[in-house]
Length: 192
Length: 35
Image (cartoon, rainbow over the protein chains, first blue to last red):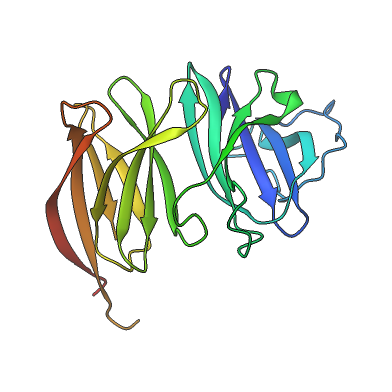
């Protein structure tokens, strides 16, 4: 994820229920570790003699509920948002388990939930992938592998929800759903 | 490694001309082999 020209990694550890935001940055001796709780470990290695390796600098960490999955990142106005789904309590079908979160302008303040909604078959979906149409208008596609059911959905401009804009039956049992954008503005989906 | 076969299906997505509606059409389906 890129914020103001800098590269960040969001890592979620479902076993420890923590979300971390880390920055990829050149290794420097003055970097000290923050209070963040790292969810992955990386050993920095130099890409070539004389080049400084990149390291991951933890800058924000926050406890989350267990069961978050299917993160789909998108942008509005150059700012980063993501869709996430909670499957931690599958018997509770009344809870709005699909959220839009905003990655705050100051990345060191982390993320904040914008809205919580429900999504058909949220608990059984196998793939949720973001894509764009037109001039970067954000959408997402859902796929249910056991039936092949696909929905395409448009995020609302107020970021408080989405509308289904297409549905189809793709082959069942695919494991990959890949949105493809060409330089000519065409959009495709690949199911494998 | 045993030979496996998977199917790749490709759909095109385009505006339908109507609000809140996209057109989705299958444009290709090919078999992928690892042998």
